[in-house]
Length: 463
Ligand code: C2O
Ligand code: CU
Image (cartoon, rainbow, N blue to C red; front, top):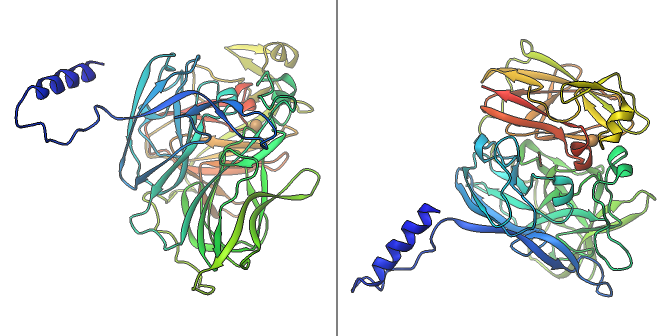
């Protein structure tokens, strides 16, 4: 506020100064991202527009693009009726800017603002979303893409951001079904939409030309849905996961699995011909495939099929050294419908499943239900850590670590791709390893947002 006052006073003083009138007018303060109510035509035109919560009135929020190593400055102006905050998912960020209400900042009350200001060390596809009552706020639309551009980006004809989502709408009036935290969805797989789509609409289409090369940036912004995808009339390679480049492009041969919060960067060539329609296709629960995003082909680009693209330039700090001597931690996921629970502590008190459920809580991470004052682990800055995840539940969970990327450790000790969100399936233990090189308080939680709200949230301290 004081900054604004000074600025205004300064501008006022300027206005009266002859000879300076021709100076370019600059906006005072950082650019604003306004969280506010809006309407969006998510459903087919015969339905009403849906009342959503948005950033700057659009669904999803505006695509923010910034060069690698650059700075993001955004003033979150909260015009919602509820407190909110923004998390910059996957950015290895300064802890104070991580946006977790109650841990790294206070939620921003209605009518107030918060200035986010941070640099982005890694190029890639990231996203931003509300991190206050996320299970409701993200479902209402508070999410958008954050693209960090490589200095030396691969040559493509189009760079397309595809924010995949689903919405649970009342078929009568196309408005969100409430409550958002329904007991049934919290204790089971989560809140699934009955309408699926991309970039805020049930039928996203973008015209392309035959032979064009596209970079597709897939982001799963849904609360709980694991997208199973394949390409039709498109052929190409996966070049990055969760923003982080693969050492070499991998041909897309099998289905792509995209768990909540995960991202996949693809470089694909349009192999469909003029007049046909290429598509990103998803498989639904009934095993039918349906278009998730359509690419009608109009015209033909001169280039014919091209070679494998070069790998994206690596980001800094992608190594996870010292695996053998790393500190080892165990995290057991328990609870949920049909799951087991060996004993749970909530707010420092041990509790049975029945009592937990009475408080809308269904899950535990290593015996703890939700946030506590003591972190799941206190790590020394710079140390390498291995965390073994055991899924003793009947559901899949998309586990996300804030502030640092990790790699999966295979049984033979080899390391997988760098990720910030990993899908854990029942009875398939997995292990991750990371360097605790970012000081601060970092959440570790399930990105099935209803699960996060009902027990599957803990945190790690790095100092
Ligand atoms: Cu994308 Cu803690 O979240
Ligand atoms: Cu979960």
